[in-house]
Image (cartoon, rainbow, N blue to C red):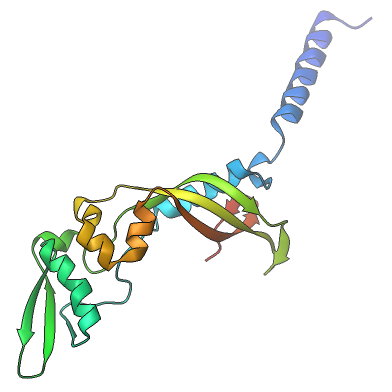
Length: 182
């Protein structure tokens, strides 16, 4: 006849097994909208959206469309401009207020509001991958990025800040969960 300690141990073991099954082992690796959202939010927290990706200051241009765009950052007091009449270019330098954002002028990070669709995972480079379509909002948007002039000059910023922006990203399944592949 089993003793009371054995019965208690068996009951505890059964309860633990049931809890493990109910919680779903390796739940971070399942292809669910919740896991995709968590992976994308973690990635975007360290990868903000920016206006300028490959620009170094001082920056010179004679392109009138580029001058018009950058002049909105001058108006927002992030850049200073000086015209070099002898060589027909405008030279831009970072203002004191702009040093916080230069040289890329990042304007916040994405926060996923919904996962709209995803492809079935398929092996790419040795890992299951999926393409995820999502809606997002921007967080930590500075005042200058909310300016109508800046948003008109940089349409991608205006779209991102609209609250109705969409995006697409690849996600790879790893032992630790879903991640944006580098």
